[in-house]
Image 1: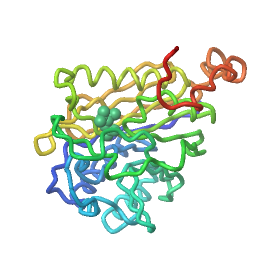
Image 2: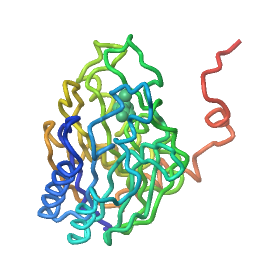
Image 3: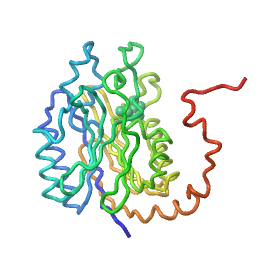
Image 4: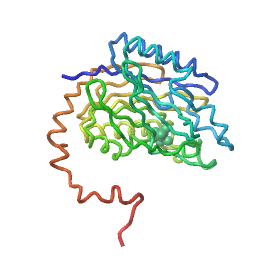
Length: 308
Ligand code: CDV
């Protein structure tokens, strides 16, 4: 058995006015609870340090820069790193990254039990739009504030296993999991901020949103024989509601643990990485069963090409 006691640490809403020190204090409280439950690894949401700011339009993009982190760790997150070292707790969380060259990414990191950043991922599949769109019930301006990630979907050896990351909308894309599956991934961790209503289809509300969330994560886990840990920022942020649905899915595609509600909270599950073996060695033994000669369109074209 190769067990990682994994904590999915959901954050309830973060209002626009809440500062990073307050959010980091909430994250530390969740980490302490994870430690009480004997966790080795704690996973937090996408853009964990602030409200989901891409819902707010700034005509001048630079006005959004205060939502970004120019260094990691930094003064605000130093106490989180310190507590993680104290607990010997590995962690992953998302934040808005501003690089020294002035580039903007929606980023998540993997931090080992010594508090060292060992992995960085930058969100590849950015949803939403670039310009203000008054046809939508709310704005989702990730394409305005972030560049698409430039690091691909790497995996890292950590905690005795092979771990990878993706972020929110990435979880809906089979390519995300498969690229990591082809590197033997045993656990994918991700955070999300999913509005409870589709901005372009008001009838698509909470129930449908949670259905699509679970469907995507469970399929990705099963089809690549990997654990998936998906962690929400949930609840009502300044009148904008985000779904919950924090869960841990096993390599068979079944939900192993799920958090109720939309407040700050933790679920801990003993994820045995050896449970990935059966799927990887049988029905999803890629070396034996994949037929790459038929997959050219996956990387050769982006949009749909209709038949004559
Ligand atoms: N933060 C996100 O990536 N949210 C998207 C919404 C816009 C659909 C998601 O996939 O949940």
